[in-house]
Length: 342
Ligand SMILES: NC(=O)c1ccc[n+]([C@@H]2O[C@H](COP(=O)([O-])OP(=O)(O)OC[C@H]3O[C@@H](n4cnc5c(N)ncnc54)[C@H](OP(=O)(O)O)[C@@H]3O)[C@@H](O)[C@H]2O)c1
Image (tube, rainbow, N blue to C red):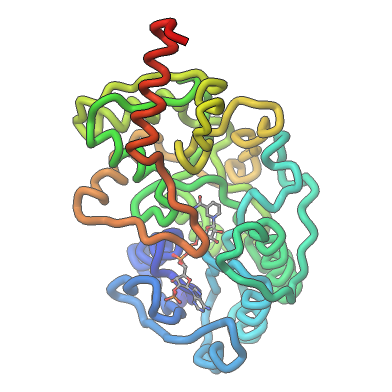
C-alpha cells in the first residue's frame, strides 16, 4: 500500500512507520523536520499542518490510506483530513481513552459518553489541560470528513515500549539500574493496564490494510501486569542490586509524593480514580488486537535505553520521576516510622 503517515518521527508514529516499511508498504511521512529523524526508507515530505500554506505539499498526492498518530489540535487534523479526502480512501487516527468523561473514575467501553469537542477548534498542542477535549475534537474532525466507515479511531491507553516519548517506564528502569533502596508505591498486587506501542502499531496497520473502520479502545482487555511485576522486572532486566521498599499509599501521599508524575505509573487505589486501569479492550481484542507479555516491553525498552535511546519529550509532557533528595527524605521518614520513632 501507499501510506501517508502524518508525523512519524517520535514514538507511536515512528513505530508505525518502521512496521509499515517492514510489511513492504511504501511510506510517505509529513512533518516539519523538528522532532526527530525520519526512519530510513521513507519518502519524507516537509510541511506544517497548522496552516493552509503548510499543508500544500500534500496537494496532488495519492495514497491508499492516511495514518495520523500524533494529532493534538482539532483544526490541524481537520485541515489534514480535508487535504487528503480526495486523494486517500481511509484515515486512521490515534486518539486516547481520556476522551471519555469518566475514563479515570469508572470502567468504560466505547459506548461511554465522551467530552464535547469541536472539529475546527484551534489550540496549543502542548496544552495538556485541554488534551481530552482536543483529542475528541480531532476524532470529530476525522469522522466529519471521512465518515465512520472509512476511518479508524484507535483510542490508546497508557503506552510503553521503545522510543517512549513520555518517559515513565524509562524513569523506573533508569532509577532501578542505579541501585540502592528504591521507593515502591502501594500494593505490589495492584493491577496496571499498559499497552506496548508495537501492539498498537500492529493493530492499526491490520485495520488499515483491511480498510476496517471503527472506534476501539486499544488497551489490553483487563490489567496485564502489576506494580510489583513492574518493579521486579525492572530489577531483573537491568541486573540491578536495587532493593524495593514497599510503602503504603497513605504514607506516600502524606509525604507529598505525587502519583503519576513523581512515581510514574502509580495511581493510588482510590475511588476517584477507580477506572484508571479498567478500560474495556474487548472490542479491539475481537477486532484482532494481540498484546505481548509486559516483561517484553520492559526488556526491550531497557535495550533501547542501553543502546543510547533517550526520551524526547512530547509536547507539554511534565518531567517524570522523583528527585533523589526527596527520595532520601521519604525513605528516612519511612524508616523512622517503621522504627516507631514518630
Ligand atoms: N504516550 C501515551 O501514554 C499515550 C496515551 C494515549 C494516547 N497517546 C497518543 O499517542 C499519540 C502519540 O503520538 P506520537 O508523538 O508518538 O506520534 P509521532 O508521529 O511519532 O510524533 C509526532 C509527530 O508529529 C509531527 N508534527 C508535530 N506538529 C506537526 C505539524 N504542525 N505539522 C506536521 N507534523 C507535525 C512531529 O514532527 P515535527 O515536530 O518534526 O513536525 C512528529 O513527527 C498522541 O496522539 C497521543 O495523544 C499517547
